[in-house]
Image (tube, rainbow, N blue to C red; front, top):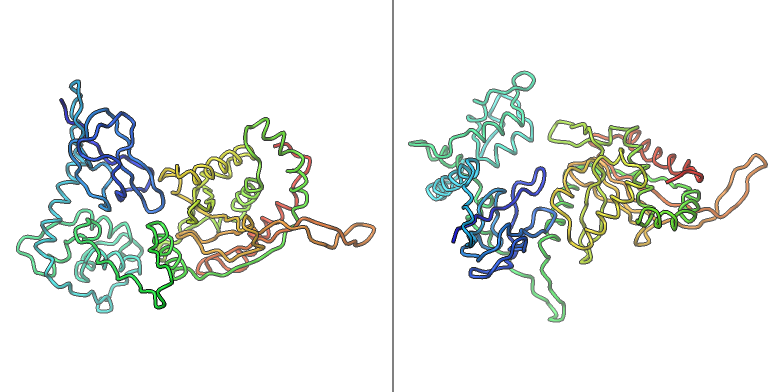
Length: 441
């Protein structure tokens, strides 16, 4: 018999931790190779962790709702046939030691009252982002002033303070109570001190049904409120004649599905136009971090998708501007199908630079969507409708039946002014109205 270490696997770029939501196996159960042992959740996606070996689950190290770091051992599996025990990597061992040290520090300092930071007393300038990090990490004003800044005029940047936090001693010896408090990691990060659940509301008439939000709905709720509080939302609307697109799709959709094995919806056509417009107006392909604007090199389009339970998720089409229509259709269908089946991976929702949401799916003519932070814009696609319209010709103006839709562009007025926001959505409309009815796929 040998003991195999089941670790939380790497789940994609920028995903460092996950919450254990459900153990599918209990101690003593037999586990087959590639069989799911537990279910986990990141901030957006639920997934399963399979076993790499066959054997018996001998020990579980974390409970449900515990937060686990990538690479940490979460369980042991007894195997037969002399399978070698996985030796913990130096990185993982260091992580476990650090966590144990922080737990001891927290226990020693949990009764110490934190001294609130008063940044107004400092003569140095600190950005709101740096101040927030300092508050969250318990860094005093004096400590912050001692950091050597690499920014303009010696200002402390985000990277400076994060580097300081990383290299900061975990537990001071003989330090002041304030210094001891500053070295304590946030208990919610380590899951040492569970939050006290709020009392459920009571039905006044005894007939109302009271249902607690599920985990994802709570996260979505928090994201939406945070986005409204963060960005100055403003909207631009434009009506688009998509008659040529409707005619072209009706003409080729059967042959397209037969040749490519994929259904051709309107979404990839619209995504193609958005990607082109973002190349023309890179000022929308940015994100905001404190007082800084980050210009994104890649165009990664988020595609808002409704899940069967009514919740919302935003999988991302990476490098969308490099895809032709066939590639875009395959990406849209793949992400949409996996979203409905609950098979998205954590990395599928990471790295978006701009988001598109199709409110027309539910019959809405237009909408005012909330920005997906830290992006600065989101485009809502309204329902396509047959409407009477004026048609201009060399012989004069006529009334005809046209296929039209509204585009609703929400953007962050902190960094995107009306000229840029309006010009961008107008460019999307121009690409759609200039669609070539004789084009190939």
